[in-house]
Image (cartoon, rainbow, N blue to C red):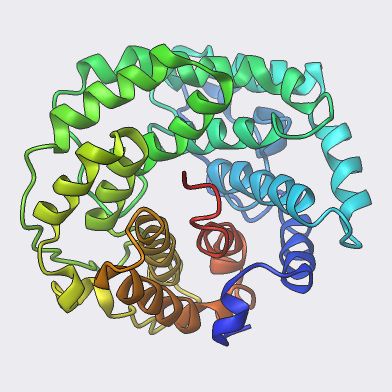
Length: 341
């Protein structure tokens, strides 16, 4: 799967990814809970706390494991795993299970649960479910509404962005959540996102790209650019990108064009760097799709994306520290640019 031709989704790869995800979204242990104990009664297991998203090592990885399966089912409906995916979704997305997830969020100690990373992924999952002719999205909508409302409540208070390459990244969360706002036709939510990213990022110039750090799975630099690409009009975004990365066609800053090396894939933090390679490939391809074909950056961006994919695609499965989440990021990169207008 490491050849350039394999850097785009095929039915064979879709089947492999589906098999990986089906093997972990209902695997309860090992599990890293994001859970505040307010008393002895709160000492409960993952499945009891989260009727749907109890697998995949942690809540947010389970959410995007479901997103992966839903995306694969839509893009490659003929894969052998399609029936198992539909059966799983029918079992998981029930009113009772969604109500249990909503009830967990109503706990006072859950106010900051999964902010903002899990918020963005949950809304991206809902956007994908809305693309299916099935009852799943309608059943799941109450949970999506809670997280959309949390964005509405939180963003006016967030005077500063969080410029990281890990779960706290505000650019990543808003980029994903915008997919939901667009799919739901929620113009007010999109307007809030647009207002906030303008305030946070619009004055940024000549990014130095001091990355990666040792456990990042996102490029803080490219993620900011991809977030603005989704929210700014093209006529506003194009000059901003040239000012933000003025030497990108010359492959500068060099750090953005050099795949990260992963020294130990059994170490959950170091294994993040495979995700960094996928997320860079995703961002470069999305950005390239907005450029005129004659722009020299377009070819550079695609070549860079393929190099990053080749570095990490052979390692999607193998050790559970990466296996429980990497295929989702690989799929982002494989399908990047397909829906760019």
